[in-house]
Length: 323
Image (tube, rainbow, N blue to C red):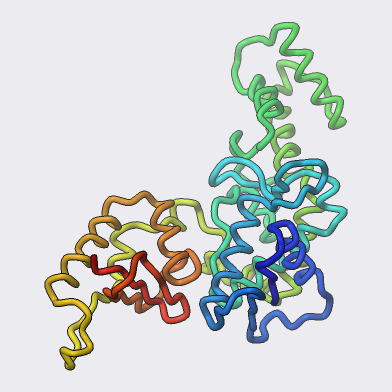
């Protein structure tokens, strides 16, 4: 994997997509990552790659595909994300690319895509549409969601409401609303809005996951958490603090840049920041510290003479200035 940091963000994303469009790749092989224009090497660079990939999948690419400012492969609100229904993205095989990205990151211990709709995950992993537990929030299109929601109550529809529901039904080859089919129609419209319009996207994601050979594990091992909920993927202060090893005193006092008191005070400032920081800030700290948004076993802190905080992501070391 190679990315030229001297180019614009759009060109860097093209390099990523082209890498995952290659054929006949053994995705389980060891990964060698290179940042052209940067001297960084090692595991930290690899973590940076996988972190970048998952960030693009979740929040969108800067590439202007389909006449949009940001190209989002997944849309909706947290814990209700579903693939975009864009025909252009499907015809460009971008969900095949997304499946390979997800499988490749999983194979190498990288972050997973959190916040997907539980109903979508159920169908993706070989579940039936009829047994999927759908929620109204799983429909990312607000206008369609509001129209479907008109059928959820018991009160009669006025002429304008009835016209909206009928237009949606006819566009999806379903019968118009009546008092008898109201509940059935609500479920059918919601199922089609969330799952029926994304059949090709599901097939492409499956192909991508199969290409990376993680598919058998996902379908046979129900205990494998591949698509966690947003709350399960968030970093908490307690979790982060438990992975940190504080500075230790050196046997050779001449090697010590700062006294034990200063080290303890600066480390205390770090702990105070962690205890009061938001989940987003903690995630950004992790990415700065180790290269991606997952905690490593031994995350060390060093107090050094420096103007600003620095990190050695390959060795999971955070270097804080002692002033």
